[in-house]
Image 1 (cartoon, rainbow, N blue to C red):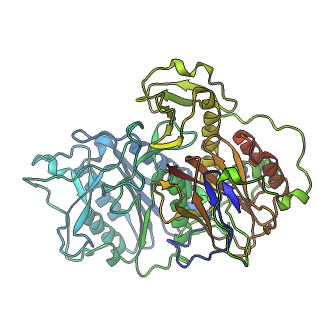
Image 2: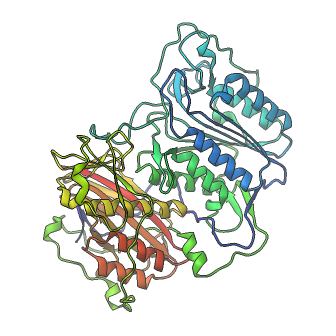
Image 3: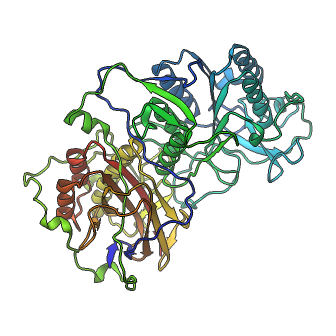
Amino acid sequence: MRTLRGFDRRTGWLCAALLFAALIGLPLQPAHAAAELSISNPDGAALRALVIGIDDYQHVRKLKGAVADANDIVSSLRTMGVSDVVELTNAQADRASVLREISSLVERTKNNDLVFLSIAGHGTQEPERIKGSEPDGMENVFLLPEFATTPSGSVERILGSEFNHFIRQFELRGARVIFVADTCHGGGMVRDIDPRAAEMSFRQVPRYTLLVDELKPVSSSDDPKSELDLDHTAFIAAVDRHTKAPEVRIPGIDGLRGALSYAVARAVEGNADINHDGKVTLKELFSNVRQVVYQLSDQRQNIVTVSSPAQMPETEVAFELTRGVVLIQGTAARAASGQVATVASAEKQNPAPPAVTAKSQTAPTSAAATAPAAPSAALPPFRLTTPIRLAALDGKMGYFTSVKPQDASVQAVQPTDNPDLIWDPVSHDVIAWGDVVAYGVDVGGLTTVVNRTAAIRELKRMATQSPQLMRIWPDDRQQRSGQTVEVELSDVGSRAVLLFNVSGDGTIQMLYPVGSDAAMARSANLRLPLRVGEPFGAEQIVAVTSQQRMVDLETVLMQLNRRRASGQVIKSLERYLPADARIASIGFFSVP
């Protein structure tokens, strides 16, 4: 029996009966190469794009990251060699301009072209106009900057059926389409927001009633009844029809962004080519983007992917990647690629013993104990250049004069100034982006929480660059004492696995391999059962896998076991990650 601080681990292989999707990890585009990477159409024809981003709404709540999303995707496409790219942002994206540009794009499109459509902004739902076109009778709608519930303002929106109309026109010209919708249409949340947290930004407005609707939809007799009636189109949506898409913080980037747009931009740059064959299949694209969004959103977003019935995602090539010469190999290239991993649990013949609390456990021994020791020289301290923004719930900044973290500087801000951490001086709870990450932390303990926040930010960056599939079942809601949840991992067969936890106060806990655990995973898929217990707050589960046993990294993790050493873990990962490593970084959030 091993304990994941706040959870009890019960060993045993449990093959997943069903996976939400057969996801696989994706590699980071290498930073060291002798020639630039470019994207191409597998059919040899042109690649064209229309990208829309709207923050500056005039009559509904403004957004903060949709224009940056559009700029990012456009920059990625152009950097990757796509020349026919049209971008519309804010006031440029009125209805007349959107219809004009998409109609012009249809006219330019030729047989076998690949058309990329992307929109980031507010979404909502309205009763369907085509009876039976939607499973719940509601149609997705995309709002434009001047939308209002007045007669004239009602025109400034695009119906989902209108996008389908234009997609059909692309298909009739022999083109394939990838449509990315970084909006949301439902009103729920995967996990509740702590009421003390700073206000979050969502890409959804409440449903409304139009007393006078002057919109005259674009349509024709051969329009598809639904997305499933299209033939050569792949859809990627930020969330399902029942949840909201938050604007998130991306490690190393100022301001807020859409996790889906950010993931798509990185996939376009080459991160989605998991097997390095220069061909990104729809399965690879969907899998990469899904895992990146899941991790960047702290498990609040689960994207939706839909491909036409005639398409086979496993073999259908979304786009190809070309490079003039072979990549430069070596230490620098491996360090730059910061790749990602997965986790496993040893196969046991006997049932797992009853769960126990963390305090009743002794430090486990590991197979790594017989491996060669890691270098004894102390690693230089890990340190982020961007400060951790710390606020007190009552707005007073004097509390933090004694907070002197080693891994990042601290900037005291007001709770309304987009803080990374909010400390409640009454309960001493620490809140990060709507979740309580630690309960009952006095001022003296904030240093370790700040250090941990800096480390988690870096872990997210590394896991985003080359993610390994890892999911939480049955869901990603706050977990309560005594509940059992499972971490599910896939595509780990015949790979070496390391699994550890970074608790809310920065304590490192080695989870696998421990004791007699096999160093190499014995199955492609597994579920790791965990039982919720004290202390409550945030737990960051990190998995690293490689085709070879990571002896040095394994030894260092055992040396750091049960120590508050989150910064040292980051430094060790930077030093010892093998070139083919994959990383997954998933948070648990528990409450008493």
